[in-house]
Amino acid sequence: MTDTSEGHDEPIYKIGDLADEFGVTLRTLRFYEDKGLLKPTRAGVTRLFTKRDRARLKLILLGKRVGFSLTEVKRMIDLYDPRGKNVAQLKVALSKGEAQMRVLEEQRASINTAITELDQTIAVVRGMLHEAE
Image (cartoon, rainbow, N blue to C red):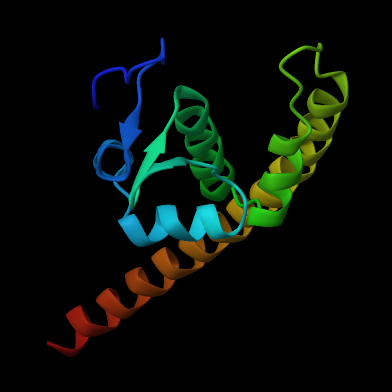
């Protein structure tokens, strides 16, 4: 993290700082910028990210990890109003979160079934191999 810049009271992060902290590539951060998810300022060719950008990145990565598209993540983040109570944002996040939870639970059930079936198949094959030896 760079020191606070002149005229800024909050920390300023360079692109490499955020990439290192969150384990993403510089290309990923530039891609998120191109998609309008992050909006760094510039000092020459250097991208400077604020605490707000850092928080947005954290939400983007969380959204991706739980299976949201970048479009969905952007929509939810863009509903944020620093002057309001963010009821609309919270309702959308809750609705999408509950829907995604159902999808993930269905996927988990399918995976558990596949694991059980594969475990049984492996046991049968082991038994057959043991008898054949």
